[in-house]
Length: 149
Ligand code: DQA
Image (cartoon, rainbow, N blue to C red; front, side, top):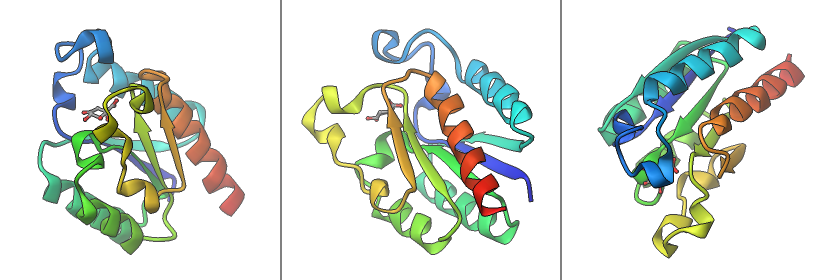
């Protein structure tokens, strides 16, 4: 299976409007277009989704396992700091690779943003590259899935 999921957590539907001094002026649609192009360049198919609901993200992880998706790129947004359920979901689909991405440089922000539960279960974490981080995460995931054959 050559398909990946690119998942987005709460409030990312407001990208471009929400705190643009931190997250920039590009919209989630722009991110989707960037991801679609990057996936195409790497010979991957993509399913791009956003939800404001924690359990929906958990369900999508289970769906990825059932459908034998090659890997997941996720920006868990605020659920990064709160969701043990997402960490457990990540572990429950192991060895399916999950890459965590954040648009902003979370380690230069408030202290509460620096604790990521999901980090314990992911293959890699990227932050601070702006929306370009999504492209870098997809490129990294493509390398991982290629290496696996
Ligand atoms: C974020 C960083 C999180 O701390 C925050 O809650 C978000 C977005 C980012 O992409 O920089 O919603 O994940």
